[in-house]
Length: 244
Image 1: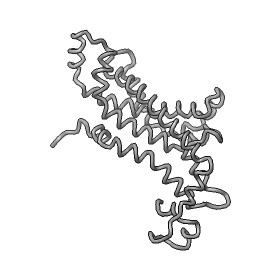
Image 2: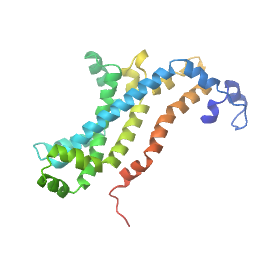
Image 3: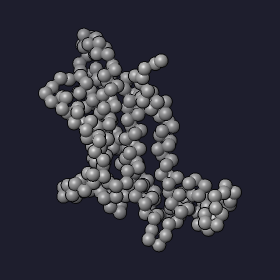
């Protein structure tokens, strides 16, 4: 994909698969001169805001399920797990009709959908981390006069950094790469990058050079975030594993 993005249409079909060719930046220049940067901005807004809201809500919900006893706690926990098994494509049609009827189509509505879709995973991931925190720590803090909210922010939250990093990266990648809902809930001015890449497949043919260049640019931000948070992600996914 990377090498093809630096080839002209003629080089792609005449040269075959070869790393020996005269590279060109024409494909990148063509896509950046269009509306591509606007799509990049839309995707960044959707990804960052959806991830932030998901982490905030997911952390509080996971803490409530782990530490508080209330009526319906177990059904809510099981229902949250079952919601994670529903494919987003199944919800596309009902979400479209509901969102358009109440005027939520656009970036705002798309963000709310991504938050709702990613909350179950985030809640269950962070729930496991909170369960690993000894309750004695909170009891000791309570003896010293630390209330539940202060205990959550100053005691529990710092211990959740690996889980927050893992949940944040996965949530961002889903919001960044999702196509089905983004294609039906956005208009011309609020398209995100996955749909922008799809636009390079035209009825008159496919410009493979521009398509590959767009694919490379779309893949860069998730790769950067993954490498930056690699240690936290590994710690988050392997925390609690049994050592042999």
